[in-house]
Image (spheres, one colour):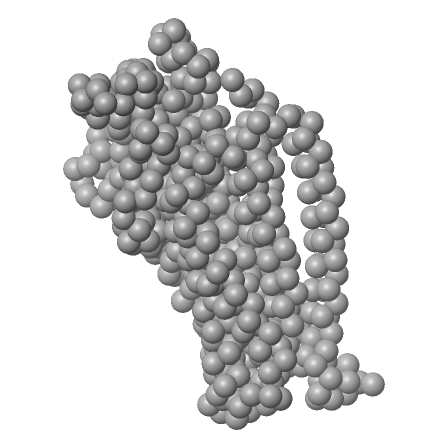
Length: 517
């Protein structure tokens, strides 16, 4: 039986490495297509300033890209080292999009990033723009296949459990790729990346304007970032709403935890704005809410209820009892694979097999678990409410604040008076972390909210881990922390150095430090 400590340490290591990796991914996604827009302006107008914008912001893109690749490769190796049974159980499905990501998107992205940096004097204007576009396309395709894999973990479709191999096997690749979860997750994530890249450009450009340097360059960069960011943020919120609808339909425990809904409310449910939650008493001791709004947003109807946590726990207990029978029948069926009667009985309850596997944490013989242990397993199907509730609100708050920044930046850029408001420019600089807050909190809600499942309602986390020791994991976690901290220091030093130099780093002789010298 796997110890709880081993499971917690395995989860901690993957959480640290994945959330660290996602510091770099959104900026890569966002800057890649901003470079396409900047270079398109250069090709269409022939004005050198747009070429300089493409080259300068491309330098910062390249620094960020290198760290994103390095940290992403580490994550993929962890599936084999730390999550061996997970890799065995679902490798037939999960491995396919990861392989495509490595073979197609990664090499496409890496090939054309070389042409982007070294092809300025070797390719025609149109040829170089095509290389830049394909580089950006590769970045997005890389994200696509990773998100297809993650969406399948959230909503497993196009697959079936094979009791002879004891594995999930793919039955319809197209269904996996075109899952509504895959589409919504992809669009939500890449638009969040575009928002991040846009805020990065806006904040640094605002800093140049505050310092009174490279005004023309900074104004054009800020205007482009503001317009691009405004569209991207609106799309991010729209796709976030779509994701929330899917969560309400397919992951009721997650949405109930996000909204601290303990009991089923008469439809349409109110939207909680502020709540003080008592996890032990399983209720809110104080709450401020807006009538009807959650029901309209979460179900898009006036009649569909949002089920509360307490009724969901009772339903989970029922499914666990069914799952207990499914596990027992599966064990008998594996000893007598030709028994048609056993197969028929198993097929009747196999939809709850994952719930039965939750009982494996108490021992290998699930028939011996007590009613108290069944109740404990049922309670474990609901993630902790407080971190879910406030992380979700931090994500939404950061997104709404970003919209305000892009609206103001767009409006005053169009008026041509943006340099008249230094306090507002400082606010733009201070807003730089907002998209990262939204992205990190969004991933926390998505992944923590899926607990206790690795594959939702199919494979529990405690069965997914490798047979490692606590010492192995503690040592590797410390190693990752030290290495990643060093890499982050180097990356931040390079980013700050080039950002401070600004377009003077291009060596064209047209910008602030060169003219000053």
